[in-house]
Amino acid sequence: MSSELLQQVRVIDPSSDTDRIADVLIVDGVISAIEDAISDYPSETAVQNGQGLVLGTGLVDLYSHSGEPGFEERETLTSLLQAASAGGFTRIAILPDTKPAIDNPSSVAWLQGEGRGAGEAKEAREAGEERLQASYPTPHSLFPTPHLYCWGALTLGVQGQQMTELGELAATDIVGFADGRSLTSLLLVRRLLEYLKPIAKPIALWAADPTLSGNGVMREGQASLQLGLPGIPAIAETAALSALLECVEAIGTPVHLMRLSTARGVTLIQAAKARGLPITASTTWMHLLLNSEAIDSYDPNLHIAPPLGNPDDQEALVQAVKDGIIDAIAIDHTPYTYEEKTVAFAEAPTGAIGLELALPLLWQSLVETERWTALDLWRSLSSRPALCLQQQPATIAPGQPAELTLFDPQQVWTVEARSLKSLSANTPWLRKEMTGRVVRTWVGKSKVYATCN
Image (cartoon, rainbow, N blue to C red):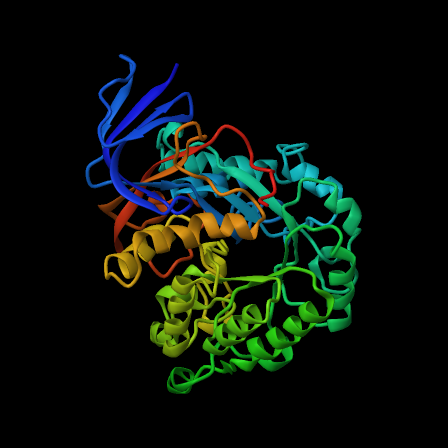
């Protein structure tokens, strides 16, 4: 029997709206008791002083990118999952834009473990994992492997041209349907929503019009003019978003809207929800922390998609997540090698890593400044993302599986390639000191498949 006691830890559980100091006893991976003080526990119990630490429900990432299969030099599934666990995530869903794409049942089966470890990628994978273990030899027991889910592609090869065999994919273990890219054909969107309506799995769409984006590399506005970089107008998002909302209203299929990045987008989502449209929405963590003015450094790791908003966009997003207009924060972890990202800002591929950085940076920026409560942050990273995936959120209660994140909001560390479990280090916080770090995760006994009613 394994028994652990956390004494006087701050317990944050958005499912029960709990924020309190308590003792928590965990026995064989199950929460046994939560009390103001626990004195009756097994003699072999490992006791830890939890003063100053935060114990919250495990974090849930709605969508991120895996390098494997296809780009194992960026990230392997092993390094992705270890980075997720080190960042406090107990569930992570990856987008289907791998190579080959997750657009058929065999690719889903491979991702779930059948066939992994063989083929052309084996050497690259093993080399990356050797580097990972050498640079970050943290005991595996502190960061067990989180539950991996995958989105099934809406279109073949995520090319936005031809629908996948939706029924066959729905019969697999996919968490839902998404391309992770914008769909430019509204006729295709209409047909997808019609076909997927009876399947009743989550559908995630990204509202972005590439014809309006043109050759832009940052949000259009005063900062783009000052920096001499071509801008992407806000209507590249909002025009596409309006069209998607019209489709949802006409057909009635529930949809999750990814990567909201504009103040006007928030207004459209709020109005659509007020009309009763069956939608949820998310923004990414970096859009809450930074805005277009940060790009004056020309750091290519700030070249992300959608681009960082202007200051009014950032403020609107922060308030919208707090108010629940935007349901959840996604990490959208996008690894690239040093060589891929060490180019001019406009030439760099879009995306940055974030699984190990999001919680401490959001805590410092929003909770420590008292803009949000700790429960506000935990809802947006834990219970609400689970609900967007139609999953039962974790809860901290006696008899429940221990799906938990232990966070030290005062631990100081420096972000270095060797201090990260991700194989990539494409982040604007590289070589910077950070306050706050996850020190332990528990992932629960079994993968969550149950639909939340």
